[in-house]
Image (cartoon, rainbow, N blue to C red):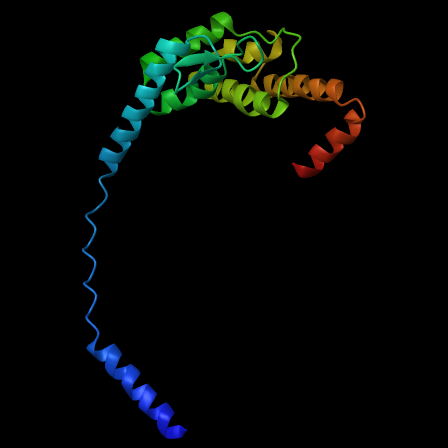
Length: 187
């Protein structure tokens, strides 16, 4: 039995030694970060141009049909608000200026519609705050607070309170003070 094991080990060792060697993978060329960044910028610009030409003033572009879609029956300008900071970061200033002008001219939260509160919080509240951070355009804060904000913290608080009020309206079994306490515990 020991002899059989020894013969098997010798055979396996011989097979491993005689097996063809795998070629060493070629050394990857250094990443062309500037080229990659330029490619991402061009793809973003192409997507933005498609939005501008086929869905301007609406929440989003359906890319296959090239038709606009409004999430709630009327536009809340989801794409322009959510994209403003990205356009600015990528140096697409003309596109960012057009988006900001559209937002300031058309966006209103004085609507009695049911919305997805998470989307409103992350895309619109977050988008308006980051847009303000990057442009210092106070009118972006005013959209959140109805002209009552003295600074971004009070605008964010007012906007967040409006979202919380909508949640409370839609889920009356929740206790507002309990929700605030849990949020305070988290942050």
